[in-house]
Length: 442
Image (cartoon, rainbow, N blue to C red; front, side, top):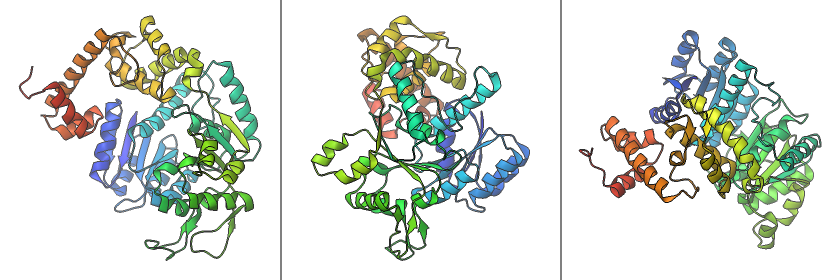
């Protein structure tokens, strides 16, 4: 796909460009809103990634222009925690989704993959697009999952809080999005906020807003997330990480339906649905005094528990084939499938990272595969799969070759090589030292 990156920070353009080019996408960049508008007039893009705060014009103008001249172009908004309210407005104006800084590789690739999948379905008409916009299918043939999805669709019609529980990587946000899109609130904002990623002193401000001068740094009035998402759905991800003081205020809002910003004397009424998700046992946290029991009671009106991949191993072949097709198309690799020996190995694995880990494993395997079938030696060495000893030796050799080739291509610029490999400079330095790699090494 052809992607336009619009950001006035060179490092952001470089980082995003590297991530997307490694995934075989064609990338163009613009260092200002004005430059982006010129490109939109002359070039066709599948996706536009634009920062909200540019040096000349606001990112909203880029969004509006893209929606006008190229209605089939999807726009992803880049924002920071301090401008999340603007991101909600952007979604209302037609943005496909938004991501927050610092940008995470898996997050941006996940959104791009969703768009790619939707484009493929619309081109081939292989199957009707029954999933709502912005929602990935929860792929499964397990009867337990099918029953769970039926429950999800029923719960979606009841406008009450829902607690979604499950291990990391099981698909809690997918379920939350399905609840939203299957509910009467579809078409209104869906906003997911990671409580664990917000500093404690910002949690209350982000959720409830604040008045100008209410605390140091509050230089202007700010609406809270609950108010900005009015009419839609808010997902409080990693709810267990919410501070005690914010828990108290959230409880009051759920009980009374009232939202009072920091430093404010007036209240507004909560008009959004609240979903929460966690990979922790909240009942145990209540016993230890780390989570409020009365808040758990309010959030847990309905509970959706997602089983781990270990509990639905029959889905592993289905998921593997899906990811092979997806990444084969993205990387332009003619990978038809996987050897039976390798598939058995994957089915025996414990998968502590669940579907997310399996997805990442297959992505790397497709990228490394040089034949029509993924074999054991194509599995990434860093995954949790217990590889046979001969395969470990093969993988070590492949890793050394890949690192050396990348370093030579980047003229031994370790910063650029690390970005190309998708690892940190520190990790690359350690591997160079571990393998004893040198410039003149053959």
